[in-house]
Image: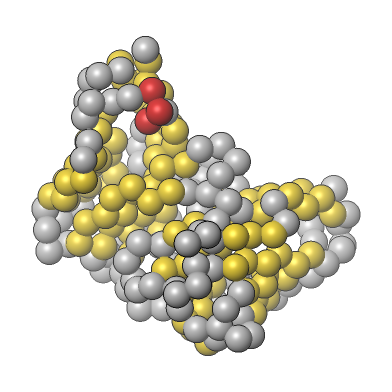
Length: 112
Length: 112
């Protein structure tokens, strides 16, 4: 049972445009959400996070939006750059002695 | 800050052999996590240490898997009697609190 779902395995966006990556979750106990970026043969790299008490968090070109009632979050990247091409993972935490629960990832391809 | 370090980066072993992986977390981080990632999936949480205490181990995949963190610094993950299905990337992560986790580059295990 996938508690964190990323329904788009891949996404292609033109350089300079906005990239929007989506994530849905089913467990209402999750209260902290993160996005990671991963290049081949490397570990995931933290991008941005959001607590459930907020609905938006920005860091430079990256913004994460959280809609708790819909159990949905999204990552916006503006403007998209070639170096953004990677696999993006959505992850969620419910605290306690528990690790992160990850989605399957979305492969973002930035076209020149 | 040298980041999370994992050793070895790659391991090829014959079915039935035992393997041990090492993780050195970021020095001031008291939380340490192990994950497994297989092709097309996100990282899957295995076990969690806070200092030297293993607070969650029910997610270890079988009794062939065990982990230690003897002095609350580095950690080891051992797989006994390896099977072909154990082939995967094993990731270690550390954090200072329940916020963002920092991942190592992983150990890729191939069981032949």
